[in-house]
Structures are given as structure tokens and as C-alpha cells.
Amino acid sequence: MRKIAGFRLALTQCTGSDDGKRRMQDEVMQRIESAIPNAEVVVEIEGNRATIAVVSGHFAGMSRVKKQQEVYACIADLISSGALHAVTIKAAIP
Image 1 (tube, rainbow, N blue to C red):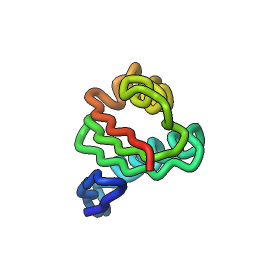
Image 2: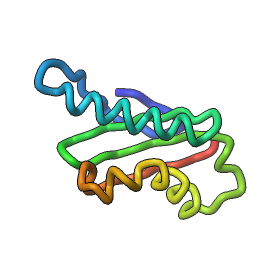
Image 3: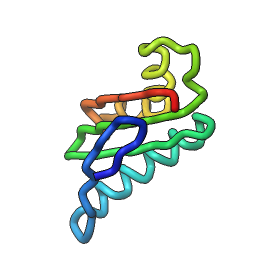
């Protein structure tokens, strides 16, 4: 269980057959960390569904929808390709 700014996500330890899951988690995290300054990111992948929690001062002054759009933009191609189907985004300021 990992907790950031009030968000708690359980991350499964990935081994062997979970290599694809781990790669997808790492890819999503890297994209968000590269695009959103000082982001603390937690990603949970189950099949083609993702739960993403992001905390960054970059979100200060943004509406809830705008914060989610900022995160969504990082992974839009993964969604349009079908690699990810359902995504839950939780975004907050520290």
C-alpha cells in the first residue's frame, strides 16, 4: 500500500507473467513525471484499467477537470490505442 497526499493505492508486486503490467505502470509513471513538474505519481494497472494518483504543485489554481485533463494528455495515445481502456485519475496539490 502506497499513500500520497491522502490517496492510497495498493500496488501489486509484479514478477514473471506480470512483466507487461510492470512495463505499463512504469511507462505511465514516466510520461506523467516527464510532463508534470515535481509530480509524485502512483499507478495501479489491472488488465487494461488504470488508477492514477498524481500530486503536484503544478495543479495549483486548476479546476478538478483541468487537473484530470493534464494527466489524461500524458496517456491519451494509450487510451486511443486500446492499451488502456478505463482510467481513474485522482489529481491534487501537495
